[in-house]
Image (cartoon, rainbow, N blue to C red; front, side, top):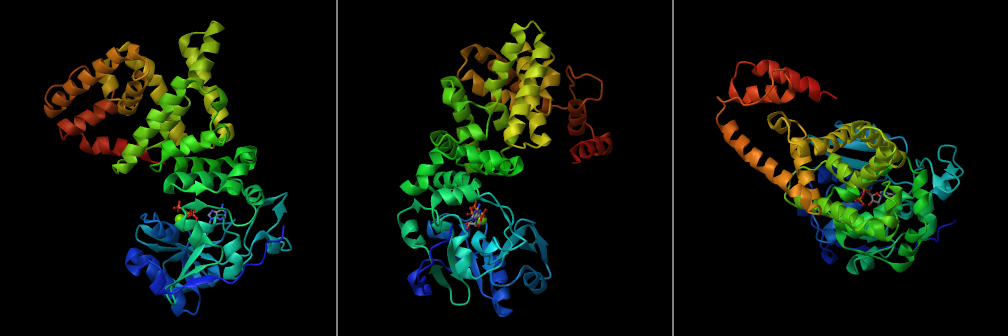
Length: 445
Ligand code: ATP
Ligand code: MG
């Protein structure tokens, strides 16, 4: 579909906008100046500019330039070229990476090019370089398409982005349905940006979201996993979840049959997400494992119940249900094993916590804390679990006292299990080297 030609851009000189260099990372500025000095146009673009104008601290700063990737590579010794679908340069400054993208043309121009074919409506490769005007219209939403040009510190708006920012409105560039068909992940990005920045999704941009969820089935599961993590684990999980559910997009990310989501299940998920949001706000670490355990808990219970009816043992039912649920999840999102394994451990520990046997060993289990937190979350909606939560709460307090007095070594076994090793490292120095070797071996990827 040919895009309408862009009108004249609105160019705000430095005196007419609020973005100042003091708000931009030193390293991003260094990249912008470096490219400019080498004779290229260089702009800050995307989420960084958008967030600054909305009064939010940007997560990172993206640079767009007229320089080709090889020219960027040649300009910065500390740079590397990456990516196949999009060829990008990464300029490294210690832990900070500045991503530099060459201006690219939209798929219309790409269509004639052997390098960038379309599969139906979908863009497969996108490496046809172009002008800034062309770069604008391949971006997803107007608010993501502002350019802050280093040469004169001006802000360039080709698509009415400034009005949308002022109205806190999310609008696709071009016809929404076509843009979602080109890349269905844009639907998830719409939800994420609306949730994160409290934007209203403008009506025409919003309408197809209710209808086009099924397009997500064509997106590689690994890319969907990345998006799901950004949606739910970046500090605005509750709002993202509500919007995903509202637009009927949740079913394409989790095997939840959300249309029939039982109120208790919904409450459990919301409580976990609220907790995650609080942790993010407090700067505490969060992991997909815990959330995965929560999201799939009810499907696990249902599958297990069906197994038990067939007369298998509880253990067999659990193993079969766990496999089935993780398999149906894997059909939707490619969740790496380093997250599914801990989630399965959290599940397995639920019944062990309820049995209350060998408390000393359980307390030292690497997943004890997560499993306990999960149990406490469940107890909010299942009062029968509260005595078990109280029991383990008290045990942990006692353990706290024990840890402070390393001499006493309670009911830990002598089988060299991880908890014992950890314990020794706290108490006596004797086996430290050995413990560390074991710990780092098990942490190796
Ligand atoms: P965040 O705050 O999460 O970084 P962002 O909008 O900067 O948000 P990025 O993934 O860093 O997200 O993308 C940078 C820019 O690239 C976007 O602002 C947008 O202009 C463009 N972009 C990213 N993904 C797409 C997409 N799927 N389709 C079109 N343009 C995209
Ligand atoms: Mg960004």
